[in-house]
Length: 282
Ligand code: PAF
Image (tube, rainbow, N blue to C red; front, side, top):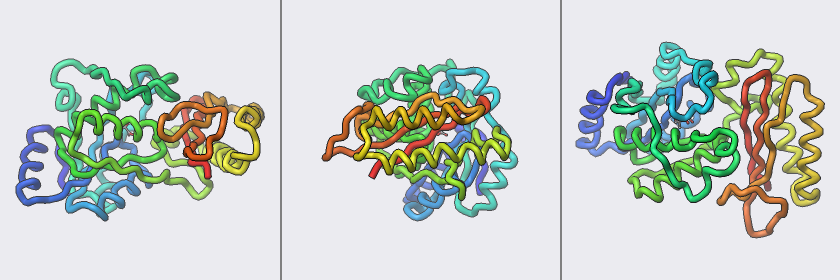
């Protein structure tokens, strides 16, 4: 596996691959790799000649400096995971100046309102930061296909929208949420949870499954009350938001419509760690 640590070397590498007509699959990450990331590479492996990942903790997408500071980083461990997986041909680990040659700040995007919902309300500026880094990485890596987890469903929708609006030559592929055996959605942030808190956090997945059972037989306001009650009873957990939204517009709904698809979205703070999850409602 090639470990590429600056933009110039990446450029030469990509040029060589393009000359050979290689189809590039790309999965950008912020490191602290886990099996969820490996599932992205597995998908990429199936559909491309070459799989590239990147590791870059993007400062502009953190609206909370403490969250940025506490974000888990262990580059040697990550490289080892990538090597051992046998799924990745090259990893790009840029410096901040490779992504932000002038000022470390985001561009402003219009994602047709998708950015105003959920995470956009809770984390102002977050999606401008994501758009900026992903667009820049796409320009540098020039992938044919790029892979993103459905755990960050809003991020996935926003990246699809950016690619559509900017007519970027890349296909965006969503990969289903990878869950631990107990149902907890895998996330780099889980590393900050004690083992007993990880176990307790499975209530998030269990609640989403209940919501799916209640869906279409219980009204949405009533479902929201039930979810609030569940989390009121959990020690050390705070429900930041729970809502049901249209999968396309991401707009919250209080009513079901037969011909549209819906998804439940939830954010819970467990011992100061912000856990996010979602589930398509059947
Ligand atoms: O999902 C992530 O890990 C990040 O938001 C991404 C897409 C790598 C951009 O920094």
